[in-house]
Length: 280
Image 1 (cartoon, rainbow, N blue to C red):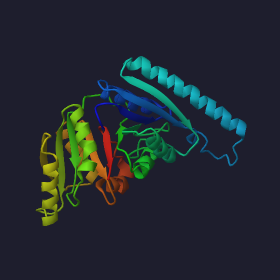
Image 2 (cartoon, one colour):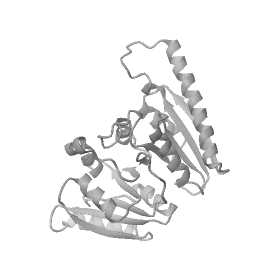
Image 3 (tube, helix red, strand yellow):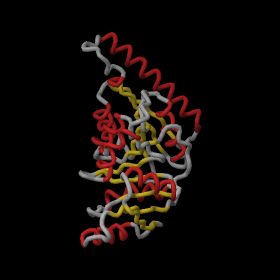
Image 4 (cartoon, rainbow, N blue to C red):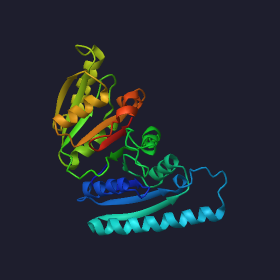
Protein backbone atom coordinates (compact mmCIF):
# COMPACT_ATOMS: atom_id res chain seq x y z
CA UNK A 1 0.00 0.00 0.00
CA UNK A 2 1.23 3.49 -0.69
CA UNK A 3 0.34 6.69 1.09
CA UNK A 4 -0.61 8.35 -2.19
CA UNK A 5 -3.91 6.74 -3.15
CA UNK A 6 -5.39 3.58 -1.70
CA UNK A 7 -8.13 1.41 -3.20
CA UNK A 8 -10.31 -0.54 -0.77
CA UNK A 9 -12.87 -3.19 -1.75
CA UNK A 10 -15.76 -3.80 0.65
CA UNK A 11 -17.99 -6.75 -0.30
CA UNK A 12 -21.38 -6.22 1.33
CA UNK A 13 -24.56 -8.18 1.93
CA UNK A 14 -26.09 -5.04 3.54
CA UNK A 15 -25.98 -6.67 6.99
CA UNK A 16 -25.11 -4.76 10.19
CA UNK A 17 -21.82 -6.66 10.28
CA UNK A 18 -20.96 -5.43 6.76
CA UNK A 19 -21.69 -1.85 7.88
CA UNK A 20 -19.41 -2.37 10.94
CA UNK A 21 -16.64 -3.33 8.52
CA UNK A 22 -17.36 -0.24 6.41
CA UNK A 23 -17.23 2.08 9.45
CA UNK A 24 -13.91 0.55 10.51
CA UNK A 25 -12.39 1.04 7.04
CA UNK A 26 -13.58 4.67 6.83
CA UNK A 27 -12.07 5.43 10.24
CA UNK A 28 -8.86 3.49 9.55
CA UNK A 29 -8.09 5.52 6.43
CA UNK A 30 -9.63 8.80 7.59
CA UNK A 31 -6.43 10.75 6.88
CA UNK A 32 -5.58 9.19 3.50
CA UNK A 33 -6.75 9.57 -0.09
CA UNK A 34 -8.86 6.49 -0.82
CA UNK A 35 -11.36 5.07 -3.26
CA UNK A 36 -13.80 2.67 -1.60
CA UNK A 37 -15.55 0.13 -3.84
CA UNK A 38 -18.77 -1.29 -2.38
CA UNK A 39 -19.53 -4.62 -4.02
CA UNK A 40 -22.69 -6.71 -3.79
CA UNK A 41 -22.96 -10.14 -5.36
CA UNK A 42 -26.56 -11.02 -6.19
CA UNK A 43 -25.49 -14.67 -6.52
CA UNK A 44 -25.80 -14.68 -2.69
CA UNK A 45 -29.43 -13.58 -3.00
CA UNK A 46 -30.54 -16.55 -5.05
CA UNK A 47 -28.58 -19.45 -3.54
CA UNK A 48 -31.84 -20.95 -2.33
CA UNK A 49 -33.66 -23.98 -3.73
CA UNK A 50 -34.64 -22.37 -7.03
CA UNK A 51 -33.26 -24.51 -9.82
CA UNK A 52 -34.37 -22.05 -12.49
CA UNK A 53 -34.03 -18.29 -12.22
CA UNK A 54 -36.19 -16.26 -14.58
CA UNK A 55 -34.70 -13.25 -16.35
CA UNK A 56 -37.34 -11.05 -14.73
CA UNK A 57 -36.42 -12.29 -11.24
CA UNK A 58 -32.74 -11.64 -12.01
CA UNK A 59 -33.55 -8.11 -13.22
CA UNK A 60 -35.42 -7.42 -9.97
CA UNK A 61 -32.47 -8.65 -7.90
CA UNK A 62 -30.06 -6.52 -9.94
CA UNK A 63 -32.19 -3.37 -9.54
CA UNK A 64 -32.54 -3.96 -5.78
CA UNK A 65 -28.78 -4.51 -5.47
CA UNK A 66 -27.99 -1.26 -7.31
CA UNK A 67 -30.52 0.74 -5.28
CA UNK A 68 -29.14 -0.58 -1.99
CA UNK A 69 -25.52 0.00 -3.08
CA UNK A 70 -26.31 3.63 -3.91
CA UNK A 71 -28.03 4.03 -0.54
CA UNK A 72 -24.91 2.57 1.11
CA UNK A 73 -22.73 5.01 -0.82
CA UNK A 74 -24.89 7.91 0.45
CA UNK A 75 -24.69 6.60 4.01
CA UNK A 76 -20.88 6.31 3.81
CA UNK A 77 -20.60 9.84 2.38
CA UNK A 78 -22.69 11.23 5.24
CA UNK A 79 -20.82 9.15 7.83
CA UNK A 80 -17.44 10.77 7.26
CA UNK A 81 -17.89 13.51 4.61
CA UNK A 82 -14.19 13.34 3.81
CA UNK A 83 -13.01 15.14 0.67
CA UNK A 84 -10.16 12.59 0.40
CA UNK A 85 -12.59 9.71 0.05
CA UNK A 86 -14.31 8.61 -3.18
CA UNK A 87 -16.98 5.91 -3.42
CA UNK A 88 -17.80 3.54 -6.27
CA UNK A 89 -20.34 0.72 -6.46
CA UNK A 90 -20.14 -2.70 -8.11
CA UNK A 91 -23.20 -4.91 -8.53
CA UNK A 92 -22.42 -8.38 -9.87
CA UNK A 93 -24.11 -11.74 -10.45
CA UNK A 94 -20.79 -13.58 -10.15
CA UNK A 95 -20.15 -15.94 -7.27
CA UNK A 96 -18.56 -13.95 -4.43
CA UNK A 97 -14.97 -15.30 -4.58
CA UNK A 98 -14.77 -14.86 -8.36
CA UNK A 99 -16.32 -11.40 -8.09
CA UNK A 100 -13.79 -10.34 -5.44
CA UNK A 101 -10.83 -11.66 -7.46
CA UNK A 102 -12.02 -9.87 -10.59
CA UNK A 103 -12.66 -6.56 -8.75
CA UNK A 104 -9.22 -6.74 -7.08
CA UNK A 105 -7.56 -7.17 -10.46
CA UNK A 106 -9.55 -4.57 -12.42
CA UNK A 107 -9.44 -1.84 -9.77
CA UNK A 108 -5.89 -2.44 -8.43
CA UNK A 109 -7.29 -3.06 -4.95
CA UNK A 110 -4.83 -2.68 -2.04
CA UNK A 111 -7.03 -4.21 0.66
CA UNK A 112 -10.32 -6.14 0.88
CA UNK A 113 -12.33 -5.33 4.03
CA UNK A 114 -15.14 -7.62 5.11
CA UNK A 115 -17.22 -8.53 8.16
CA UNK A 116 -16.54 -11.76 10.01
CA UNK A 117 -20.03 -13.12 9.44
CA UNK A 118 -22.82 -12.79 6.92
CA UNK A 119 -26.44 -11.72 7.09
CA UNK A 120 -27.39 -15.08 8.64
CA UNK A 121 -25.16 -14.20 11.62
CA UNK A 122 -24.29 -17.73 12.68
CA UNK A 123 -22.22 -17.12 15.80
CA UNK A 124 -20.72 -20.51 16.38
CA UNK A 125 -18.34 -20.43 13.43
CA UNK A 126 -14.88 -18.90 13.31
CA UNK A 127 -15.81 -16.69 10.36
CA UNK A 128 -18.79 -16.45 8.01
CA UNK A 129 -18.62 -19.03 5.23
CA UNK A 130 -18.15 -16.35 2.56
CA UNK A 131 -15.33 -14.73 4.54
CA UNK A 132 -13.58 -18.12 4.79
CA UNK A 133 -14.11 -18.71 1.04
CA UNK A 134 -12.55 -15.33 0.22
CA UNK A 135 -9.57 -16.00 2.55
CA UNK A 136 -8.98 -19.36 0.88
CA UNK A 137 -9.21 -18.05 -2.69
CA UNK A 138 -7.68 -14.55 -2.49
CA UNK A 139 -3.99 -14.81 -3.37
CA UNK A 140 -3.20 -11.34 -4.71
CA UNK A 141 -4.26 -8.93 -2.00
CA UNK A 142 -4.44 -8.70 1.82
CA UNK A 143 -7.81 -8.91 3.51
CA UNK A 144 -9.07 -7.44 6.78
CA UNK A 145 -11.99 -9.14 8.57
CA UNK A 146 -13.79 -6.99 11.16
CA UNK A 147 -15.68 -8.56 14.12
CA UNK A 148 -19.34 -7.75 14.49
CA UNK A 149 -20.11 -4.35 16.09
CA UNK A 150 -16.39 -3.72 16.64
CA UNK A 151 -15.74 -0.13 17.73
CA UNK A 152 -12.87 1.49 15.86
CA UNK A 153 -9.67 1.92 17.81
CA UNK A 154 -6.46 3.07 16.10
CA UNK A 155 -4.40 -0.13 15.60
CA UNK A 156 -1.24 0.50 17.65
CA UNK A 157 -0.62 -3.09 18.79
CA UNK A 158 -0.45 -5.82 16.13
CA UNK A 159 0.01 -9.53 16.94
CA UNK A 160 1.80 -11.66 14.35
CA UNK A 161 1.76 -15.37 15.27
CA UNK A 162 4.36 -17.55 13.53
CA UNK A 163 5.98 -20.95 14.03
CA UNK A 164 9.20 -19.89 12.21
CA UNK A 165 8.99 -22.94 9.94
CA UNK A 166 9.25 -20.83 6.80
CA UNK A 167 11.15 -17.77 5.70
CA UNK A 168 8.99 -14.71 5.02
CA UNK A 169 9.72 -12.72 1.89
CA UNK A 170 9.92 -8.96 2.45
CA UNK A 171 7.27 -8.62 -0.28
CA UNK A 172 4.67 -10.61 1.68
CA UNK A 173 5.53 -8.79 4.93
CA UNK A 174 4.99 -5.44 3.19
CA UNK A 175 1.24 -5.55 3.90
CA UNK A 176 2.01 -5.98 7.61
CA UNK A 177 4.61 -3.19 7.61
CA UNK A 178 2.33 -0.82 5.69
CA UNK A 179 -0.48 -1.54 8.12
CA UNK A 180 1.84 -0.91 11.09
CA UNK A 181 2.93 2.40 9.50
CA UNK A 182 -0.65 3.73 9.47
CA UNK A 183 -0.56 4.37 13.23
CA UNK A 184 3.09 3.68 14.07
CA UNK A 185 2.09 0.32 15.59
CA UNK A 186 4.17 -2.07 17.65
CA UNK A 187 4.39 -5.60 16.19
CA UNK A 188 4.26 -8.49 18.67
CA UNK A 189 5.68 -11.67 17.14
CA UNK A 190 4.03 -14.61 18.90
CA UNK A 191 5.56 -18.08 18.87
CA UNK A 192 3.69 -20.97 20.46
CA UNK A 193 6.25 -23.46 21.80
CA UNK A 194 5.87 -27.04 20.62
CA UNK A 195 9.48 -27.98 21.45
CA UNK A 196 11.77 -26.62 24.16
CA UNK A 197 13.92 -24.77 21.65
CA UNK A 198 13.94 -23.69 18.01
CA UNK A 199 15.71 -25.90 15.48
CA UNK A 200 18.41 -24.52 13.19
CA UNK A 201 15.97 -23.70 10.38
CA UNK A 202 13.61 -21.89 12.75
CA UNK A 203 16.54 -19.88 14.16
CA UNK A 204 17.53 -18.76 10.65
CA UNK A 205 13.92 -17.81 9.82
CA UNK A 206 13.55 -15.91 13.09
CA UNK A 207 16.70 -13.86 12.41
CA UNK A 208 15.50 -13.14 8.85
CA UNK A 209 12.15 -11.91 10.21
CA UNK A 210 13.98 -9.76 12.74
CA UNK A 211 16.01 -8.12 9.95
CA UNK A 212 12.82 -7.37 7.97
CA UNK A 213 11.35 -5.62 11.04
CA UNK A 214 14.46 -3.60 11.88
CA UNK A 215 12.75 -0.24 11.13
CA UNK A 216 9.58 -1.07 13.07
CA UNK A 217 8.92 -1.39 16.80
CA UNK A 218 8.69 -5.10 17.55
CA UNK A 219 9.13 -7.68 20.30
CA UNK A 220 9.23 -11.50 20.33
CA UNK A 221 6.98 -13.48 22.66
CA UNK A 222 7.03 -17.18 23.55
CA UNK A 223 3.95 -19.02 24.83
CA UNK A 224 3.81 -22.59 26.12
CA UNK A 225 1.31 -24.76 24.26
CA UNK A 226 -1.60 -25.40 26.63
CA UNK A 227 -4.66 -25.75 24.41
CA UNK A 228 -5.90 -25.02 20.92
CA UNK A 229 -4.06 -22.42 18.85
CA UNK A 230 -7.22 -20.31 18.72
CA UNK A 231 -7.47 -20.23 22.56
CA UNK A 232 -3.82 -19.29 22.91
CA UNK A 233 -4.05 -16.53 20.33
CA UNK A 234 -7.16 -15.10 22.01
CA UNK A 235 -5.40 -15.17 25.41
CA UNK A 236 -2.44 -13.32 23.94
CA UNK A 237 -4.76 -10.75 22.29
CA UNK A 238 -6.37 -10.04 25.67
CA UNK A 239 -3.17 -9.99 27.71
CA UNK A 240 -1.30 -7.57 25.43
CA UNK A 241 -4.36 -5.47 24.47
CA UNK A 242 -3.84 -6.32 20.80
CA UNK A 243 -5.75 -4.18 18.27
CA UNK A 244 -5.19 -6.29 15.12
CA UNK A 245 -4.24 -9.93 14.58
CA UNK A 246 -2.15 -10.48 11.42
CA UNK A 247 -1.20 -13.78 9.75
CA UNK A 248 0.32 -14.87 6.45
CA UNK A 249 -1.90 -17.39 4.69
CA UNK A 250 0.19 -20.12 3.05
CA UNK A 251 -0.20 -23.89 2.61
CA UNK A 252 -0.26 -25.59 6.04
CA UNK A 253 -0.13 -22.14 7.69
CA UNK A 254 -1.42 -21.29 11.15
CA UNK A 255 -4.54 -19.79 9.50
CA UNK A 256 -5.32 -23.09 7.75
CA UNK A 257 -4.87 -24.98 11.02
CA UNK A 258 -6.91 -22.51 13.06
CA UNK A 259 -9.80 -22.57 10.55
CA UNK A 260 -9.76 -26.37 10.46
CA UNK A 261 -9.51 -26.99 14.22
CA UNK A 262 -12.59 -29.09 15.08
CA UNK A 263 -12.99 -27.35 18.43
CA UNK A 264 -13.76 -24.11 16.62
CA UNK A 265 -16.97 -25.59 15.27
CA UNK A 266 -18.04 -26.29 18.86
CA UNK A 267 -16.90 -23.25 20.83
CA UNK A 268 -16.40 -20.68 18.07
CA UNK A 269 -13.24 -18.71 17.50
CA UNK A 270 -14.80 -15.35 16.80
CA UNK A 271 -11.80 -13.10 16.27
CA UNK A 272 -11.87 -10.61 19.12
CA UNK A 273 -10.08 -7.97 17.05
CA UNK A 274 -9.76 -7.21 13.32
CA UNK A 275 -7.95 -9.99 11.51
CA UNK A 276 -5.46 -9.11 8.75
CA UNK A 277 -4.88 -12.01 6.35
CA UNK A 278 -1.81 -11.65 4.14
CA UNK A 279 -1.44 -13.90 1.09
CA UNK A 280 1.94 -15.56 0.60
